[in-house]
Amino acid sequence: MADVAAIRTALAARLTTLLGTTGQSSAYWLTNPTPPTLQVVGIGPTDYDTSFGRGGDMLTATVQGLAGTAADQAAQVVIDDWCDTTGSTSVKAALETERPLATTLGGIVSACRVTGHTRPVITQLPSGQETWSVEFTLEIHT
Image (cartoon, rainbow, N blue to C red; front, side, top):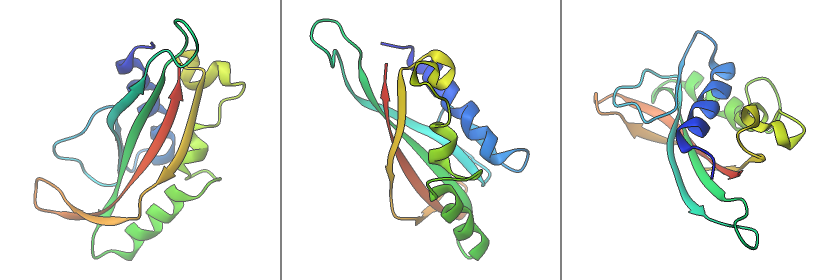
């Protein structure tokens, strides 16, 4: 299996391309994020040896997007942009851009696919701030 920390780091680096200097991305869950934020909040479940014998593994990852103040319509537009299947602001497009698959995420995995996202909801951060959020599910093959 590929190194989980390396996978997290590669995902966060790709997500940075969506945020530029206006937001933050993180390979790990932030305790006090400042929206807009895209963070890798979990790796798992994992299916080991998905081929006969010692084959590749299939990991599931979750990326959480925190877009901005709950009362702000602009935050909902940010989430719409992240949920698009194509374009320069699409999470799916950012994580699936590298072809051929052998080079995905800098060559540490053989495939990465964004399989879906949740319905946007209002989430309360530890600071008490409420923000629009969405979670993306990824399927990663090593």
